[in-house]
Length: 370
Image 1 (cartoon, helix red, strand yellow):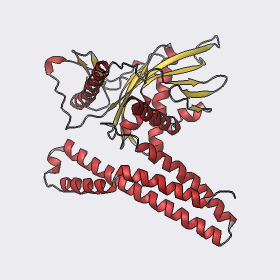
Image 2 (tube, one colour; image 1 turned 90 degrees about the vertical axis):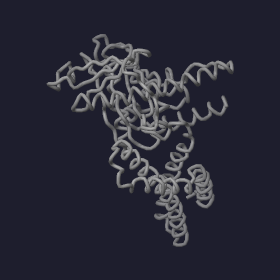
Image 3 (cartoon, one colour; image 1 turned 30 degrees about the vertical axis):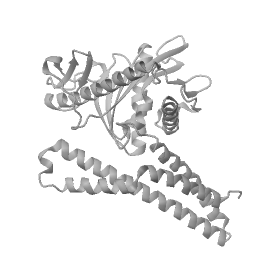
Image 4 (cartoon, helix red, strand yellow; image 1 turned 90 degrees about the horizontal axis):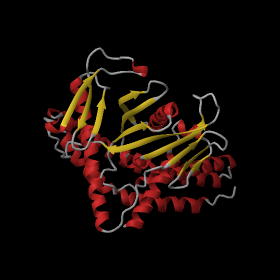
């Protein structure tokens, strides 16, 4: 076996040291101590939203510390495994060490990507909305394929998701869907998925067997927190209530529990139908509306800064990825050039390579602009 284990392990330790420096375990431990003090307050659950935020942040901080400690132990264990294999001249154990080295290297690269996320809201949960675009039944079917793709991706990582709203198409698929991903750095991770996605395939809905191109838009926003202050006047809202519906327009609720909020100054519309009561749906819709307004405010501020600097660029998120399901069978990210030669594994949730390349690309863009 030609692997230079000593050099490889030294390289792993050097990369891990950089990751650890950015993660700052001392700062994490101080944060855990502060959150534990908040969590032990006798009146913590008097404010349920705040209590959930505190416990979730505490879990995330502890999880990050455990991840760092676990990874350090993995590198130590790998080194011991190599020493045992070499001393015993054991080819089988050496092969096991080689396989573990490859896995550690892969997992370390994923951890390294996390350190590239330093945006204001990158640590937050994400709210993702998928909307079908041009392409008729193919587009609504594509939107549903993307919804399944992201939910499968989250499932692979053990992330909690919740579908908040689904608008079904009259034919195949969905017109739109909104869901939450509750995990540390969910927004920072998934925000590189925002933009226009394009599908090219032989349409299963047409009789001519000709290629059909369809589009879907993906929007990713950070989940609002109680510390965010976006005031929304009641006079700026139009509120509609209606019955929740399923595929084909079928009613799935006998009461008018679904809620649609229209923010009149901006025209932003948010619908919620997942919760059982109108009050719960309205509260969920308000959270998403506040998140969108918060993101819009920041985008306007950033655009103004660029305009003042004389540097206006088109949004990097538009027309960001193509999925080819005919001939060459390929998924290609148009920003990074990253390609996957098996579209089915991507639609089954294997997105990490595409996402990691997107995060690295974004960081490079920020460095060049900064």
